[in-house]
Amino acid sequence: MHVPVRVGVIGCGNIFSRYATGMSRFPGLELVAVADVDAARAHVAAAETGAAACTVDGLLGRTDVEVVVNITPPTAHAAVSEQALAAGKHLYVEKPLADTTAAARATLAEADRRGLMLGAAPDTFLGSAGQTARAAIDAGAIGEPVGATAFVTHSQAETWHPDPTFLFQPGGGPALDMGPYYLTALVNCLGPVSAVYGASRIGAPQRTVTAPGRLVDRIDVAVPTHTAATLTFASGALATVMMSFDVWDHHLPFIEIYGTEGTLSLPDPNGYDGPVLLRRHGDPQWAELPPAVPPLARPGTDEQLLRGIGVADLAAALRDGRPHHATAGLAFHVLDALESIGVSAGTGAPVELASTCERPEPVDGTYGAEALKTLETHP
Ligand SMILES: NC(=O)c1ccc[n+]([C@@H]2O[C@H](COP(=O)([O-])OP(=O)(O)OC[C@H]3O[C@@H](n4cnc5c(N)ncnc54)[C@H](O)[C@@H]3O)[C@@H](O)[C@H]2O)c1
Image 1 (tube, helix red, strand yellow):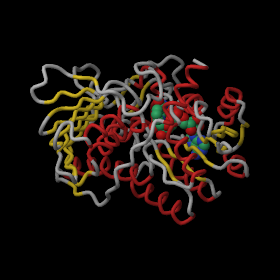
Image 2 (image 1 turned 90 degrees about the vertical axis):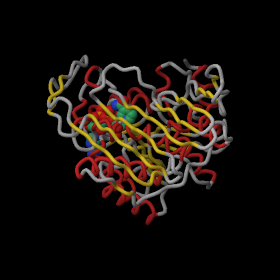
Image 3 (image 1 turned 45 degrees about the vertical axis):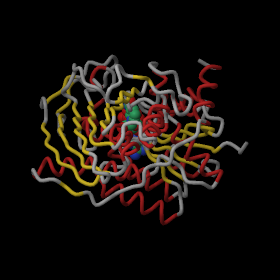
Image 4 (image 1 turned 120 degrees about the vertical axis):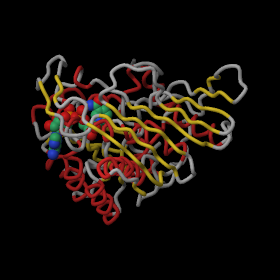
């Protein structure tokens, strides 16, 4: 058993508690410091976790912090990442890796230049659903994958996030906010994307915030809130992807993958676990596949929104001297695909992607076993 990797979190907003609780499931991680430009938020986070409340510079100056977790809003990601890398810290960044590929490229180059590890959300594909679907495809359960559908429907942030302004500004929108979960899941199963075509529009020009304890009442919308896209994968598979903050009610699946011999249906990629269903041509009904690895949290509960396995995997990789799974290269490729859908929507022409990536290697069951044991001991 290695000495735990000491972690400092920058950004103590809405998602902070889910990281703190989520990371506490993994014995390989120790949260030692928290920071936020809003000092009061850092103090609340420190009181909640027992970590030290710091300024950003103070956290980055601490010699005991080995890995920084950047969970600031998307438009702040690149600048905070640059600060953390300049301080010599390994880094894990929330999605999207940056608000533009240009900014993300600079982050990648800096980590590379300094020989520092760089990981990025989403990490949900490391859960049992993503691993099970990928194993089924690799085993030929649906034959050759031909097509896929993915539907990002409204997460209704106006009803629960105290200030969802950033979701309706550049760096946000359904594509950059929720798209990474769905596209990462598709790349995990089907490999890299080679070309995209998209169309998009703003639904309503203003949104009303109804969340309890809200900090804003209305938001002017500055990015498309409804996008329709087709993705061509290097494998030849074609995906139809909708990403929307305008679809409040529907009967759509999350993700389905269609092969020459059958169909796979995947659960919400915003969570880690849940039923992966297979129906081969001629089967009388859908069959739930046995999970390829243990779940990280109880399916169908709010535990699915806890975060941290990507950080735990990066930390274990740091100690073991091996590659991690939720890589910045994967996150960059997904950001490139999403940004290119936006470019295509603007020009009306398809876009060939300049980037590609390797499919992440499958994980073993260690993380699920650790995480579930902790959750069951401290529910
Ligand atoms: N909210 C969610 O449910 C959720 C879920 C998954 C992922 N995420 C991602 O996590 C990130 C944060 O989301 P959130 O909802 O917690 O946002 P938030 O706005 O609630 O919190 C962000 C925090 O970062 C702080 N901050 C901003 N700029 C900073 C800087 N330069 N240095 C230090 N602190 C700074 C803010 O003061 C704020 O406390 C985003 O990238 C988002 O996409 C959010």
